[in-house]
Image (cartoon, rainbow, N blue to C red; front, top):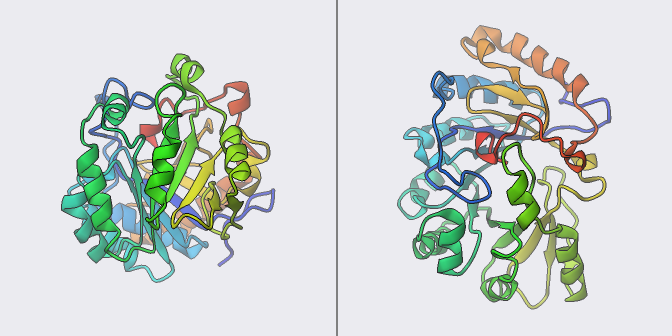
Length: 327
């Protein structure tokens, strides 16, 4: 079966699947007032629906899966979801992005279920800053969980930090100290404008290209990406065990190497994080007999995927906040 490809010649071995919209943090850049359930909103996909979805995507070339949210650790059946993905031979990498609040208690089970890659959001390495950004004074617990995870032989452990002017843009010395002896990658993510954060964006946006210039001047060297890598440009330095990644959605040609598709917690296909269209897949996830129709829908929708997003023009599409689809 042919792999998914669009009219620009891009293929899509990477699926980001949101398994829940709810989140127990209220980060200032995402859900400053906490998660607010919307009455009547469709519930998240069940495990059997997720299994049918993953089998279909694997049949058309998906080899890397990332489970996102919301906060995926809030799903009581997360271990089962991971194990379901791990049982599909064509899926070679299974990642999870988490705020880490349940990391120390749950990470052993995730690893045993088949999780291979772990990403943890850590927006600051100073307790007061971390609490200010996330609304929770849990940095020490989080760092303890990360240290434990580093001993579990994941293929990779990466930390995510959203760059925020005036809140954490002075934390680089702390991060360099952290990376000196630890084989982790910290990825700095340029703040993106969404439907509900324009004023916040204008106050706290930092251009990621300025960070990259500083890294290059300090002797950090760019690492060639793997074919199924995410959007981060990763740097290495001889004096550090860890690496630094930069995700710069406002950079030139950011979308040229797009290799990922997204599915929302309720089963809508999103061709772009900031697209204007959600294509419902859930009606075709009710029976194994619908797999051919599901695959046909995937092939058909790739024809309308655009060359790039409209962030430079302030077009945020359906994404009101990043908790709805995991960033």
